[in-house]
Length: 283
Length: 170
Image 1: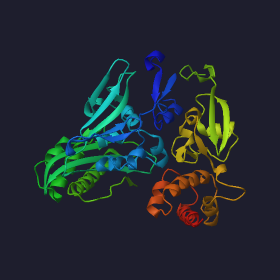
Image 2: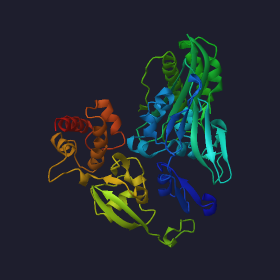
Image 3: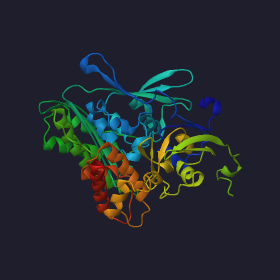
Image 4: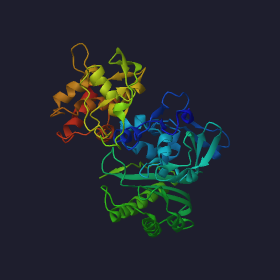
């Protein structure tokens, strides 16, 4: 349908980013195709199969609030943290996971949380369906692998193994605004030893940044104050923030250090099976 | 007009028929697709209790309930609410009696200038319908999308706690 309407047409999902952009005339589409009336695009379900190899599937039009309140999504705490902290209640009631990924705002929450997991984005165009790993889906700021007439249908997330725990923390000046910086961490632990680590940083680059050096600093190591501090310093080096109204570049790097340290601590406790509440932080 | 300006004035207005129930009453109207829900409520339904504060999805003054859930009516098109049930501040009062949330905002001095109050009360409405005994932390989270520049929020928290107690007792 978008192909028929031409280059000036755009999909409208939850609209919580696109409608403000339209008002500012930053986006100026000739046609909007509203996806809100398309049936069966909002769902959360777990694939049955071997117990620990399951995946969670989120329909593209699943609202942040539905994920926040989903018992299934709570199985992956990093996703619950993310969903429960996006903007405010009103925005979470409308905004969608598929819309957030397709917009690829460098300050958006979802891409940053999902990149720490094995995430696949299912897309549908007029001719074919594609499954794209999230890391290949996000190309640049506001740029994805989607063709003009292609849309996201489903987000597939592999449920991490037992002994794995995650956390997502974002620092915001107030609820409705984008975070100043955010950190997502997923750790797989064997006792005090970190077997695997995924660390991603948001709002401090053109896309979400995988802090690979920070991950290396933890992998195979005993998790303690010293190794956590080394990883957080490596994350500071990986961050590439711009100074803006949310703070100077140095301020944001310092935020990254604090958020990564705290997220590692929460992720490690969750990996041990503890129930820890993680939440977005406000200035 | 500068050439770079969007040529919205020259676009031929298209009218779309919508049926939206507002506070239990059906409103059938012809609207432009780009009309915002808040404009529909204020201009097409003459329900001016819903306020436009920032018009940038920040302040929450325009909060209404759509099928029971709080939404910012400045960040939705009216055509998107076609077929849904909207509740605005005008719909809270029943038979000349204030809703317990309205009563509690008055009793607890939960408002000063009142501009943000309709939005705050509808956010409180969703909270209390899901959780009649919210903690202060839960109240803070529920109204984080509503900006008040007068009260400092303390009396707003008190009002929502009081409303919850009164609604439970009712």
